[in-house]
Length: 214
Image: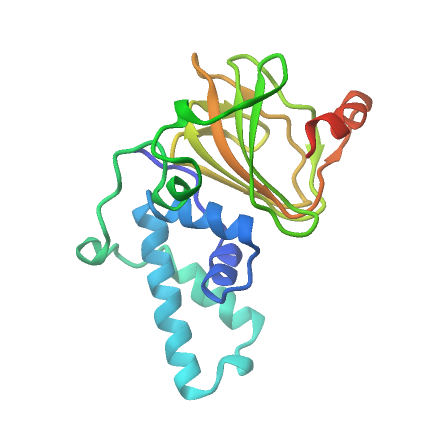
């Protein structure tokens, strides 16, 4: 699996600190189950956090110092000997407890032509669900009111950020406006967790939002 898009440093730090919601935690865990690079970064963060807690100095770390530490994570060599082997199944282990071992056996709910959803447990205003989108279909252009994490499980899509394929994760916030287009020759299936409802930038998107539930 050739993973090109990874989790943001701030997201990983929040995950290690236990400061992300249920849906975001599921997406992060799913990405970590297939991404050795991000597993390595999490191990480094856990080591750093443990050392700081032992010294009682966690509260004294400045934002700039923390950013410097996070930026160094990618520069250090990958210690593959302590990292578990990636799985073969399309369904990441953390997700399998919700939907089983096959994406094809999920009881998909058709929303409109070319779009199916399967809802997962969510918290607050956030939404956690699986999306299945047919080839050539495009989402309404939108930005975000908070974080949006998307783990690609099958297929691929392209947007203003880049091209995302199986194994990639899109870690976006309110600074990003995009319009994903499924460019694979088969359905694109992804796990998505949004912190708050999306902010659609087109009239059609705003009208369709109650139907889409995002």
